[in-house]
Image (cartoon, rainbow, N blue to C red):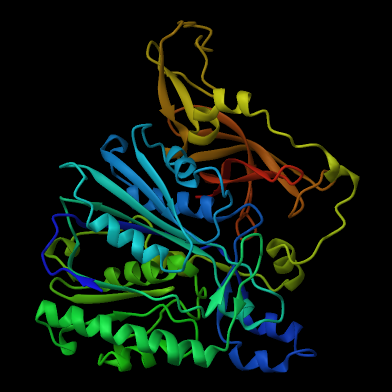
Length: 489
């Protein structure tokens, strides 16, 4: 175990969160299995969040990172790290894809981290101790997870999907690290083998009582002792425990006030895996007052403990994508079969229209990756016309300038719906398929797919914004293609 009570020059400067808008009531899930496992009804409180068919850990990471980076000059970003146990690519750096979708420069340093639910806290701690961040620079640390669960399992009720991003830097610090402690212990309460979809879990009470309840107290006591603090000095205790009441049990075992270890996400979205402790931290920072101390714990083959203190700058800080807004921004879907389909738990008959070969020509895709991934258009320096895709020649018939195009990122601008259509004949994972034309404020038009309009009226003139999503799956070769879609503004 190691601890450090010096004050690093790097601190948390901002955060952003994303929780999928689709929620399903746990009683809906438990009710579907009452004939088989009636005991599930005992844990059927609240709702859990579920990623749509076009969402995964990459798209959620992009959404959270864009929220955290709002107002930040992309050129200042030096690194982007992505922590997850459910990355879509095992041998393709997912963090690089996230960085490009966020419009970050090629010089950014990217890194994937995984292998444990402790990946989120481990990545944040490593970033806070990273002395390589230049003065005035920004580091982005993202955690996202879309863990799948077997139908009729307790995990199906407990899990949720979500992502959170933190910006780190030397200036405008809203929370500084007072100290940290960490212990590694190959305690296997659950695991997911390579190539498997679902976790294999050991007995819950044993995992709690012999695992985290025994690991956390020694780390916490050493950390508080080195910092010269008493348990009463800790205003908030963040414990990412899956079971009801487990967070309070762990806090009590550490000598901390159990009532300060509430989980405000449990009934609203569920346990979000590697992202969960950091989502709880972001939620705590929304209400934190200057001088308030927050203890963050992370578990997974050991324990991380990070002790933060909110600074005076937190009074003025307002996140563009706070956790509270993400929690409140969802809607309830009572269709359990659709839930199973999106989880990949059932195979639907999709018909011959779904048999088209979706092979990606990676050479062509790379030549256009700035436009496809970064939604980079061109703006004519001579007349101001915006066009997508970018080209050498200005499309304005009164201009026609050649090689005067400047990069212009459409994803950063709101838009209005110009036209739309619904197609119930073509294959779509969530029919009908809706697509049409949007026109951006400041110029430029784009043919896009519409998504998440279930609770908003899709009309000509409706305000929209662009989000990064899965376009389609090449299941033959295991490749996912991504592009931008329009959601209600």
